[in-house]
Image (cartoon, rainbow, N blue to C red; front, side, top):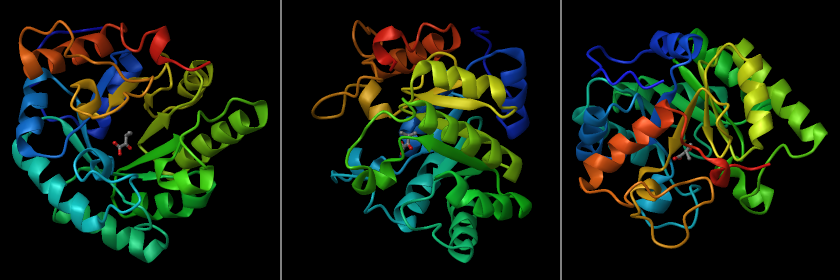
Length: 273
Ligand code: KIV
């Protein structure tokens, strides 16, 4: 559903829950600076993620692994200076939540120095106690299941997850315990569309898909990919929203929000089976 009405109040965790309940899709994008954050706000983006993807698209690295808490805190402070209405999520980088103490300290930095309103971390059962403690300390948490790019060296590459029954069931179990531990939102990356829809139906918290099909409560893309700024191949799940765009970046961002809200993105060609 695309309401087409400009948002006047900041997006909160309860806004996202209401959007899930009413069936209004959540449009989320990554951003790393104030100018992009301001353009996204104007285009009606609901949630901005300061993703550790900045390691690849901004810093030119091979993976997200070298990104530091300092990097994310700095870019989050730029993004929160550029917008007022979208909910801003800061990614917890590799090894920044390996222990409960480091997770609490680093999440605190991203909220206090960066101004983030939520933090995101990758993992299932292994991060449940950390999610529980963050949540109990008033930190809104976005969990991240499916393909976990911080584990790329362990996984042996960027592969679709949850294709067989056992791994699909593990994903579902992980999602339920993360929700029970207090996660407020769940990013699902590179899972079959059927599994994305099943998880979304089973969970009370909203799901945001990236290569997880139309059945999720919302969608996220790396903004450099959808604006055709990334060198090399675009991932299958992404789409170049600059094609046919007469109003440049502003038009492309608005087209993305519209396509997420009216359910025309992702299409079958952006989806895994
Ligand atoms: O770092 C990032 O941009 C992400 C998205 C791909 C979900 O985690």
